[in-house]
Image (tube, rainbow, N blue to C red; front, side, top):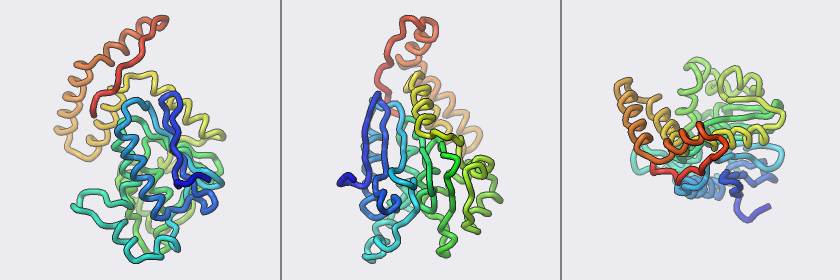
Length: 268
């Protein structure tokens, strides 16, 4: 087991992030909260990566909050929940919402139990690929709480309101096929890591600027007015057309035998 509760490796410009408290089923203690936050911020600045894959070491992806560990100190609750501004994410929320700030696709590879805070983290990704034996739960209901780690944003995008309420009010456990039917996950696979790598490599064949622009556009468009979404769509397209990667993608599409590498992604 590594010294830090999160491992990061980069190969072929794909970052692999591994939750690594396997002996605790990757339950979230304070060290893991801080390390996930720092990992997100580091990857956000890396202009060379083309995709991020997040997985859990051991038998579970993440079973939620390590209540015993976190509650050892009264100050931990303040560290998790404090925020300078109501509309900004606190530490507990950032480990879910922060993945959307990385301008490349973030693919969650899920297995075992994806419960409570683990589900909140998974919902922060762009895609979720689960093994068919994975189980899910909005566990907070069992503690008399509401899910407050930022997953509400993703649930609003993915599920009808009645389905989201059903999961959040009951805390019931559901399997991978049910999660797929509910639109909580993107795909069920017997080999989720291989499926995620194939998807990451497929997206990596596209312009890094168009991928980053699509991610930012769809993130904002889902929450704003039609007029604002159309304005953003037009402006992002102009930015793409002004960049070199769009021309490179057009060249590669028409000259597959002479493909040229993309330039570094612009700031999005």
